[in-house]
Length: 293
Image (tube, rainbow, N blue to C red; front, top):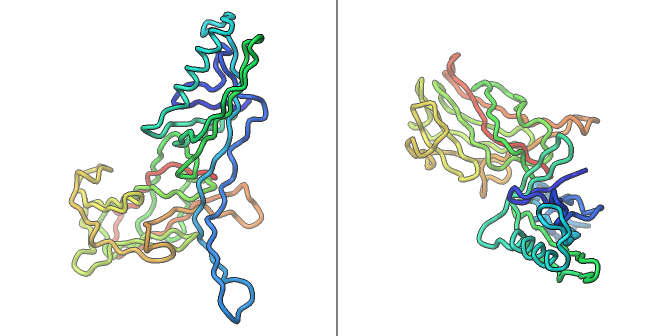
């Protein structure tokens, strides 16, 4: 049976205080944020690719009982206490909550907010109630629980990031680390052909032992001289980063999985890195979590 946990609390309470109803909606696939462009004298519309996704929402339907946390029958008074506890769990408004979905070995997490809850439908004599909560995932995508680090070559095309294999959504918040020596660095997401690099004349080289950190979520870069992933430990280099390709006006690299021809179970994120003056010490690394629709 699939299970949900909200901020670490099981939504199927172990003592039966509340349970998710069977058939509770699985997370839906997100839709594209529609953009339509028509041109006089041309039939139809201009084809537009690369549209971003809209946020997703779905319902969780709870059956609430009069069971105590110890599993005893507490009657209607305990039903009220359980409804209050559930309302407190669902009623957090000052921050996003962590929703964890598990089905066997498959685990997905997302930061969510509860945007609405129905008036409880009561059966007083049976000390039962039904409550529906509407969950929104503002950032759209579900993620792995843990962050992984992949290491590859600093001068190679079409490298498979094995730790991100199986993703179904773009990874928009990776941290990329390039270790020198290397000059005229360009890092490319193969699927979208989005690129970023250190190409500014006079500021485009990394010496041996230097590392360039590229935070794609924050759109920041830093140069560090120690084995760290902390941008705050280095010198800011954001102003000399070049970004180009689809979507480059508003974002840095989105690592996008591609489906192998005829095999939707084969989903791979490919990345390329090019530069000059590389040696055996030069390296490309990616720290990220897989993302899912």
